[in-house]
Each structure stands twice: as structure tokens, then as C-alpha cells.
Length: 194
Image 1 (cartoon, rainbow, N blue to C red):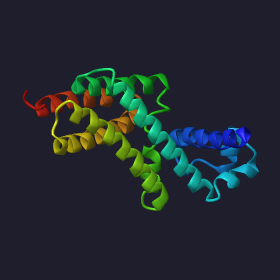
Image 2 (image 1 turned 90 degrees about the horizontal axis):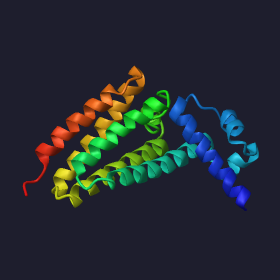
Image 3 (image 1 turned 90 degrees about the vertical axis):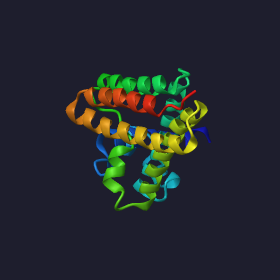
């Protein structure tokens, strides 16, 4: 049974890595099987819906992991403005350290498949919603009104995703650094009066 679970987990982890590096359409089933080291026959056992079902599972898994990473990073600082600024700056450093190969694990799939796959669109939407919820939670706990926190959480998530695209294309963290700085200004101006 442990081998069965590890094979499923290996498929999901391999798919997540490949999606981040090369997108949905650039990832083939044979490549997934080869890189995962899991038996090919087990792919359809765990994912009878094939590549699309596996991609949805990988996106869902990555979405949860990233939400928890964001939550952990935001918890390091009480002040939400400083916490969000530090998180975005850290993302730029991590992307640079990866040689611009990581960052935005959901973005490419969302752009590639949102018009053609309801399953993948829903998985991507769920991941983005989870990230927004973490930002919203941090803001509300810090005294922001829930309605304002909702709007700001969307602005934060959308700005980060856009900056990640620019950073990867330009192979430079400037877009993330600028978004970090502007988010700081926006959040300071939106901060509730004591």
C-alpha cells in the first residue's frame, strides 16, 4: 500500500514540477512516467482521466502547499504591510536562485487551459482563491475591514502573478521589487486608523 501511495504522490509531484517549467501542453505522459519513476500502468489506475486529471491533482496540491507557505511567511511578521512586502521580495530572490525556472506554478496552466478545460480552470481558480484567502485573513486579523481586505487580497494576488510573469520573461526581479514597493504604499494608505 505504501508503494501505491508513493507512486501516486510521485506522479503528482513530477507533474507539478513539469507544469511549472514547461506548461500543460509542453508536458507529455511518457515524460511524466519516466521522470516519476512510477510504473506506467499505475498512471491510469490513479488517474483514469489521464493527463487532465493528474494536472488538476497537481495544481490542487501545489495550490494548498503555496497557500501554507504564504501563511507561514506572513506569520513571521505581525504587521501585514511588512509581511506582504517581505513575502514578495523573497519570491524574487527565490526565482533568481532557480535561474528563473520556478515561480508561477499555476500561471502557465491557467493561461493555456482556461478556455478549454473546466476541470483545470476550476483547479487553478481554487488555488488562486486559497492564496487570496490567506492574504485576506492576514489583513482582517490586522484590523482591515473584511470588504476592503477582500479587494486588497485580490489586488495582491493578481499583482504578484503579473509580476512573476514579467520577472520570468525578463529574468530579473525588478517587477517583483516594484510590486512589493507599491503594495507597501497601497496597504499603508488603506490601513485602518487606530
